[in-house]
Amino acid sequence: MEKTDKCREHFPLFPTVNYLSRLSKDNFRSVLADNGLFIGQDEILFTVLFNDGAKPSEIAKKLDTSLASISVSLKRLEKAGFIEKKNDESDGRVCHIYISEKGRRSMEKIHGDLRAYEESILKGFSEDEKKLFRSYLDRAIFNACGVEGYSYKRPVKNKEDNTDE
Image (cartoon, rainbow, N blue to C red; front, top):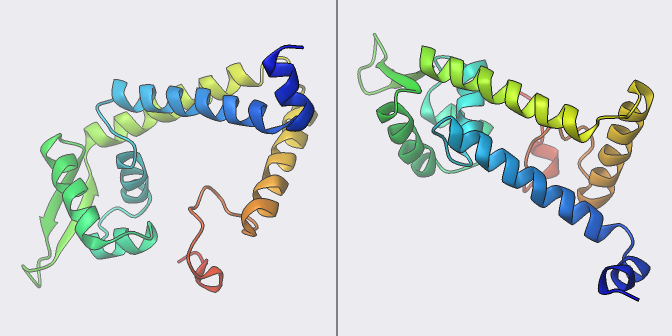
């Protein structure tokens, strides 16, 4: 019996899920790199895309991370031309973050590339099978972390604070 078969005998699901996860992470990193981004920067751009004009502190709160961490990433994204910072007209100490045209185009390309990858993974699945597969994954995630309707969010420290603003 091969090592893989022995592994499946004891942990039938974990190696498969782990391998698909690794393949997906590798593809995701590659798509981001092709667009000049690193892991994490996509989350910031996505947040800015749907909250154009947000303050850095608001972005940090939405992403459940520190303002210092967001500030470093925002500087890099601005230098690379993905975002623009503009000072508040009434208070020059406050800045607002806007996605640039380059950032918008990059997010559209990333979205398209990830959609194509997803389609390649689900090739041969019927629409009903795709929905069922997604529902199984959602249920497994809920069982693993207790966050229902997680919607791609990181699990939060205090589950009562897991609200959309």
